[in-house]
Picture (cartoon, helix red, strand yellow):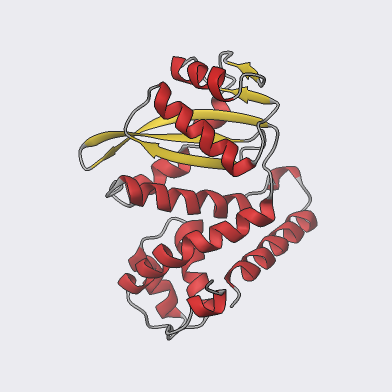
Length: 232
């Protein structure tokens, strides 16, 4: 089994530089060329294509380690799906968030039927280990069909406006979709959005609801978790 140190073997730059490039790309909204320029300002000469390869290889590994630290994400799941166009074809991005707005998981699929909903529900159950005590969706019938098969004992709510939390969670995706001039493939969208969701969770705080010292403490803890995730 490969160790984290072996993953960096053969790379010219240190894990800290590679990790910082991956963090910049997923945390904010820059392009690979923007990250290249930001690193160049600090005297780190690296091409945008190399940064793309770093994000593709190390991003999912960093996200997996952060997920282990996050643990289970809440007992209320808000689910919603949004239309995305990839290479001229219609796809659907299924997303689940908890009661605090943290992304639980996403799944890019070609269809919006009951079979696609069941597949997404099973993915959520596998990732979280157990069902929630409450599930909130809109009135799409595919959700109801999947709920009756996969989680019939869970309290199920489809009241109007109850799914607004999940609908709002699509905004960062739309922003990056415009920045990237649409996703190039379903696999790329799945890979990027899965990593982005976990990283945004780690650095997402209700800053307007807390004292500045508490916010700084939480931010320092998140950076500590990120350093542990990229450590060799």
